[in-house]
Length: 304
Image (cartoon, rainbow, N blue to C red):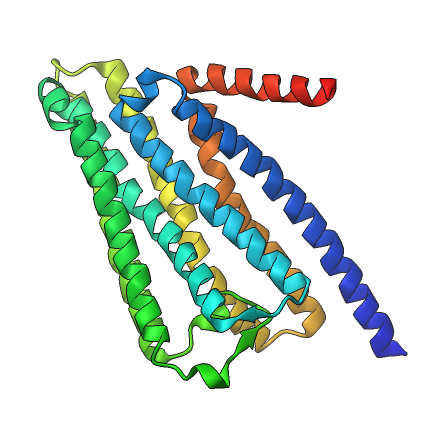
């Protein structure tokens, strides 16, 4: 009787959390979708390099948010997922996860060139070069995702036909894969950290020059700090799985479920929602169009 009561309580708690997280995720998916549409709606956004990079970052965060919520719902509903489908879903997750920090390597460099080399900015940071850099980001992330899949294929399929939790915890099956993940994550985030920090220092030094646009340098400095915050948020999502695995071994089931729910919101949902808030509301050009599109959607829903 006690076990039945405890199971019912856990089910109700999980259901409530799932509803709250799903509603929150859906709200931000709509906001991100409208912002993605906004960034493609005007030539000024399609032809400005920093907006192209922002679009790429926002697209990756939106994919991660959608995939994370899908994994949660599959787990809560106890949906059995074939191993091959799990690998495909995991490949998409890792593809999107790798794009965010790699894009954050490019974005501070663009701001650095704009402030420190304003006369060369138009010739160096072109739409063509930016698109080529974005393609390179997707290629590197795709190669990382493919490498992990090839590592997974060495494990026997017949011993693991289905999973009811299709996530990285279920799919990191060997020491070799775990070591590769740690090495790749360290290289990517150290590179991004160096890029942001170096650009920030360069902008501070350039701001002391009499020939530098002070307002542009101050705005670029604030933008680079936001890049650093965004990088920290992206890095936080990579420690979710190790923390959950470690805590599952030392906590009771009740305490573990509470902590897991808190960590999911903090490390998975929250970082994926910040891009639209940080950049969409801060940039005056994007903010006005974004609010217009949001208001139009709300009016259409009310009329419908």
